[in-house]
Length: 390
Image 1 (cartoon, helix red, strand yellow):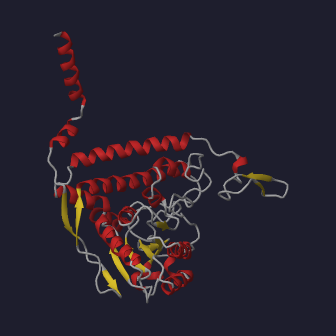
Image 2 (cartoon, rainbow, N blue to C red):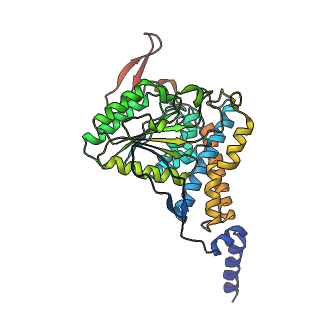
Image 3 (cartoon, rainbow, N blue to C red):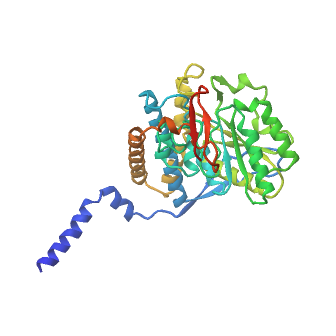
């Protein structure tokens, strides 16, 4: 009898230890999915575009919410570490643009390819790297995804080619990756991203031309966040219809603050490329909350009221949260639990990124090639030699 009472006591104490919110969430019946209307895309040289309604499952909704919240908190932590002078050098944050990186990933396969510019932290995460590897790379530590030698602008993962520091230079590379997809006969595509500031680069139009001539499976994606560095798009471009810039390449303009709109547009564009019709162009209309880089306060060329208005009306995380709660796909309490989990994950990653050792000087020449025998690399002067090991 005494053993039985002890067992019952253990069971009851286990229940008592569970937070009330978790018990409430577990006992509530949620909908499995819901149908939403999404904004119609503007089209160029296309008779039909992506659908104007889409189905969101509870499972996908929770996954998207967690991913967007992780990117947001990771970028805010990077901002804090930069201001503490733990992160140094170039650093471009993407908070506000979470629907782009998460929505694009939701519309393609893991075997597809992606290359972007220097605002790359979000894409590095959605392509499969951990927050710990990203923050450690930002702080220049050995546990970083590029062994602490790449920093903010040079992160890589499987089927993810960076992170590129030269404005617009990644676009011809993306066309080359798409050429490899076609040459190898695989049913794969390449997403090639650039910003509105890079959209006036001549090499982008050269890449358009070759991709169209060779019918490459490439989605050219312009992330239009309205300001190239400190210059508004209206002051920088004679035509701000970036989705029409391909001329002979079909295009669509997408609400880049709505993850469901981005997902459906990406699926549409991916199917177009896989069908052998050649490249397609997407313009994602989005917004960054931070300045262009950490040296830009972001309020000398736009007002604080403008930023606050976007936050209050078009924030991508808020839009998804409202949809899920109003459609009984999730509760406010459940989403708050995710917020708590994400904050803990970010804090743990930040502790690792500040405690992990920096790479030693002798590793400066490592990893120049992936599978070559060791060789010597000249340092800053001809008398300094470093060994390169793959």
